[in-house]
Length: 195
Image (tube, rainbow, N blue to C red; front, side, top):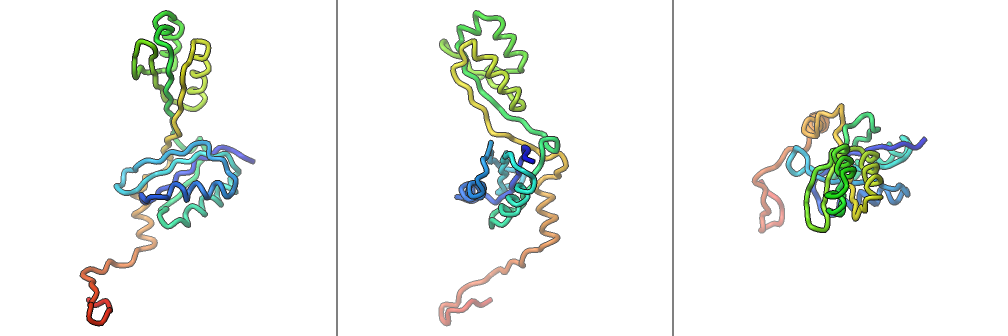
């Protein structure tokens, strides 16, 4: 049975990785509902937050396939009740309507909208919340002349996660990397590495 899953992918920060990750989904004909990429608490490591609607069996296969990418450190997938998540939205509304209609001002307060920009011809508000709340405000503003609406991708934190830093340390303890060889140089006389 299909349901909404949030896939969290921890990666090294490399050019072209976004394309390769998207290809994993497109080859399986999986529609990505939203995708967000940003830095983590560990320098040089990025976090992809990807929302899809699929069966758990398919999500498991996708997670395993994503982990085969060289730059991917770890992949988690979670249902909505296993994460804390938000989306952000911006709404552009005619300034005249807000000034003249008390109902619009009350509506914006009810949804916790904050003013971002006020101009003579329009005002931009922003709010955060779950998709349903954000869409409900957009729908409620339609009769009042909603000019423009944009919603961000999901940002999420896994409730049970201790962060990528601890996960990286655990992974390193389980599968230690090769020791670093220092002072290695190429001897030009015979074309071999010497130490």
